[in-house]
Length: 391
Image 1: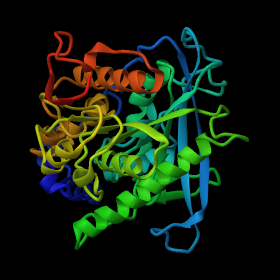
Image 2: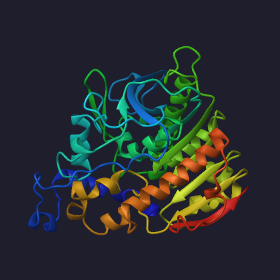
Image 3: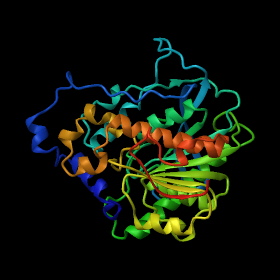
Image 4: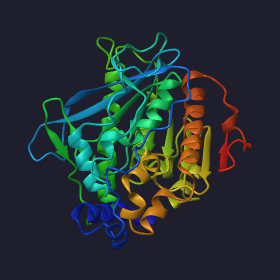
């Protein structure tokens, strides 16, 4: 999969251009009136969850992707625990929309989804509210190339329900679309097929890692911290290229105490050659990749490489939960659908990914032992332990 890391961007560009959907989709169109509505899996933690989005500007760093010179500007979405237990749905305090209409339309077009599907996605977080007393850990989340922070909303809600503050950053000009408070909608502008992938990877991963450090700066401010509380332990979570960015940010900044890579080849970073000296977990759909093998040989702390049997590259995101409502099986050609969504049932992909992620950050941010990461267990038969270091 990772030796063809441009494949998804190229295929999705074709989907957005109108070259697809396939003949199958044309022969069997799904009427919006009869299309199912997607709902994110309900969080399993004891806390209710709130969310809000904030702009963040790094005045000390010019944006290398912007058409006009200026500082790097980001949008960050926070999910955080607000109390216990989670309140029942109420018309006066409904769950927040999945995303704004402009971002939804751009993402639907880029990813070949049925128009309007993202408007109806059911979430479980509510607007407003203060972080629960004692919230001191944060997970900074980096999305995949050409994706969006919203596509890991379900995982963010889950972590927040277990007591973690989650700060998901949209990497501007990389994300499919980023809506700023002044109304601007900044679309993705990175090349789908660069002439030199190695140079492009190094550039993008360096920019992403700096974005993550910028978020850490804001979270750790003594005055007016980003989340309203000063966090003391920060972890990193990244999907696809976000996983490489998480590894690079850990290599360059010791404030990040642990990192988790969801199916991301370690491109654009020297981590495969140097390893890391803090806990790092790989949870992958592919059994192995050369950058992972190099990392294992050089890693110097607690580490795991776990394989999700039957998984696809997008199994750790919200996409499996959206696939039916979005008509992806009809709209995406084979082998794109099977490569990126796999054969595992969506609810099982979510269950296993959430369990591993919460167990990891509970252990290394909160100091709570979770036996799931010690050895294979009967509750998660899809999980394969490919490599372990440390206890």
